[in-house]
Image (cartoon, rainbow, N blue to C red):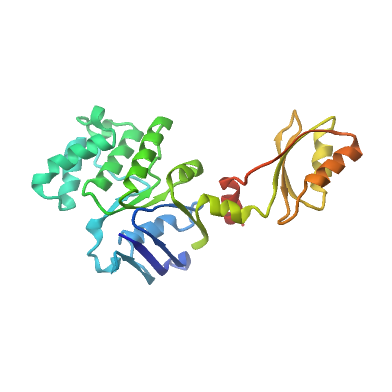
Length: 307
């Protein structure tokens, strides 16, 4: 099912959490929903699930408005702070969630076993939720979101608390689910977005500031050249100040102090290669390394969300 967000706004008192945003997510697409804390991600997700009322605009799922309340059974939701009944055994809890989601009684046992297997809970399945590690509790939360086989998954920080091996497993699971479901995934782990998501949407201060694939966002940011430079026979402070003063240079970061390794950000649509080379020749410094670097997703995120 497609999701369509059309000029949606939401305020808390005088604070506008979501400000007139519009976007669509197609069936079989995994959307990475990014933004700093307080940007409006969780509020948007809660409005899609009909947990929060919309102040203005409309959200439709499969052409039907979520405000009608008829689409809830088509959505699986894993909130950021995963609410679980800690005193319940895992299998009892998942059976309880299946019943709440109106899974036919004759199918509940099969669905519970399928989610236990799919989310890697076999080893722990007879334990109470309160006896589980944070990572396994997160798996239980993911299992309850999928227990009724929804067409849409809304996952708010789904890999929180997981170790690297578990993150890879959940990432593969999400990618597999995305072949047939509509998935919106919120996370602060940017490499995870690139590895999992088909498209990235960045929100800041309630407004959408970027929308596209990782490759598209990089292409849009390529107007700013990024160089990695190592200089020998030069005091770090002197080299830093001299490069920073070049007319083509916007920003200089020190990557390694002992080896005078610098990261140089050029102003948009200009190159700094020749300027840095000439400076080193004039000062008698050895330019040991100059590498043109691909714009990092972290840099794009920071540029778009840091005011």
